[in-house]
Length: 197
Image (cartoon, rainbow, N blue to C red; front, side, top):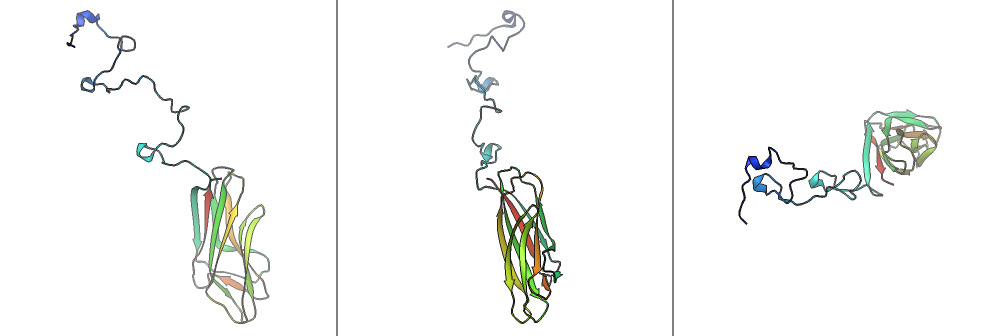
């Protein structure tokens, strides 16, 4: 088809692009080469996952996904002869869940556990959160000092909260003698993970 040139005089000075132009403007003339006339409403008409290559995360939040991880550690020694739980110094971590349906998975590693006497002794270690959540493990010792013992505890909490939560390590003496953790500048740690529920 022959190209028809329209002179300015025939245009009456302007072109109404909103109503008087149809078809596709070729890319060579500054167009897109596309005839698409329907556009996507990104706020209501898009579902699924935008691929990472297009600026998305490449994933959707499904049950079991790890949403965030927070960790704290300490090398400070704690010694107690109390038969009631006491906090292990600096073994505490805060996390704020993003949804009430989330679960919190806690891993606590306590190092350098020892008894301070040659007599029989023992220690109870606990992961603790206010409002009644806690899980514990008992460790016993023989009739001689025990040094360098380690323990790892895990727990799965369902706090049903989006408020800041504090998880901490605690310990108590199970016998008449004092017990310690991190006795030789060992490193104990507590890690919390928010799991999509």
